[in-house]
Image (cartoon, rainbow, N blue to C red; front, side, top):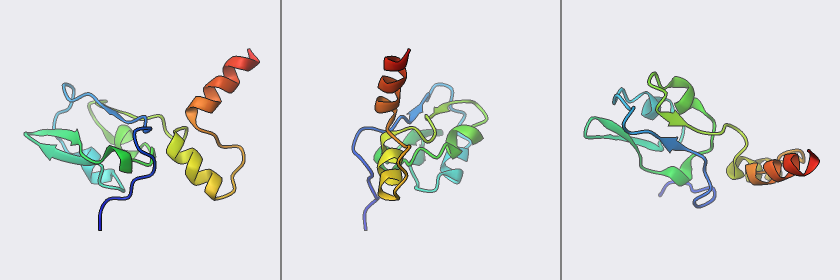
Length: 101
């Protein structure tokens, strides 16, 4: 069975491979196995499987991982499926905030 893909090419996950020390903490804490270690550095192997939980960024001692926790399109889709009405993707939130100011 392949990796679960939430939405293709919408995740806010970013990795600064230059800052990565290769400690593999991101791989250890990621509940969906998004990261692999290759050549002594982390790499994002399954980006579209990221659920934007933030465990990787919170546990990276080098600050090499960035993700907008809980505001991404994947979160919006999951929350809408669960009936949470106040959740929207980051694109919608940014547009809403901009239009109100």
